[in-house]
Image (tube, rainbow, N blue to C red; front, side):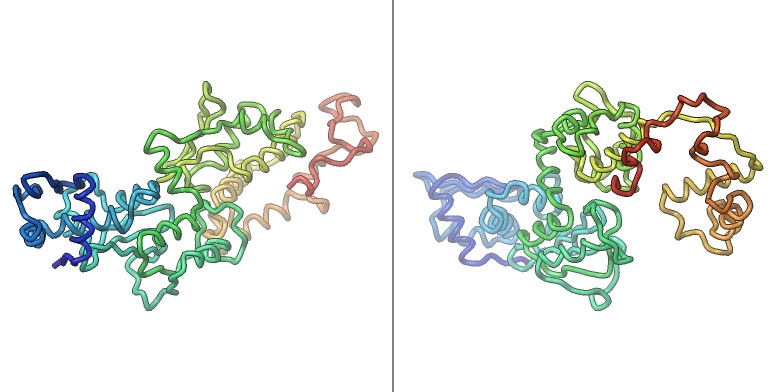
Length: 394
């Protein structure tokens, strides 16, 4: 049973002395005839202060008083993004207080990227929040590493399961095995913002209709230095870029930016809970490399492959692109991207220089290319300039 504390009633009286109280079905006013108290289940008029203090302790009224105190006094209205998310976490705008209190006693879960937030109810109406990885749902606390400082989430989200640095915080590669077991509302939101920076603010701005979206063209045009070349990336290539980087398998944000305000991209934008309002730095860095690659002229190469070998190369590309290499075991020789089967293909079809079917990417100097004249040379060839395809561009 939720209890009302004296300080909660005192806070209510102080607020009513300034203006009427209205929230989630509760209404309390003060006029010349005394106090008026109204909930969906009860209504009282002309109450004295002692009578109001007694009325708010009714079993039907207590949840409304403690709910008001939590949202207006404990959470407040200054941090509107925080408040909006915490109310979202218990569907406060969709369900009445008694129904929510019953659900909160068992715990209400909200998925946010790769984490799940569980809101529960304290004895005085205050909410407590637990945050853990979705893969650890149902795992006992004793089996997880417990943290209490929101800043600890910074270290947890810096490296993936293999200890590799995560340059994109919203990549679906967050480590599991941890829990923040008991947070208040402020610390819960700070923890989420540490794991997924600005995700809550952008989610609420979108919800309010105020999300400021910066499309690709505007982003590209404002780049300077070594990145100003991305403005030259063709529209089709921008679509391929979005398809490569901005989908659920690669990023948990939902892409809202397009090519420009008048031209949408065909690539799927994803289904994430929070929006992506502009191309991120990782996308811009990748676009720089692809801009240079797209400057290359196409050539015709001739290889001899069996139908199965052609399909195997296609399977290898798919497996790498979808990050499924680690799922293919050594014994899975029927998988095109199987390591032993790929090594067999290399032994059979690659020469000692690593050329597929012995066909060099660039013709030997002085050698006439059967697929073009001597003047049809790649602008990025050996002409004394640096090679734009070196590792320095990565």
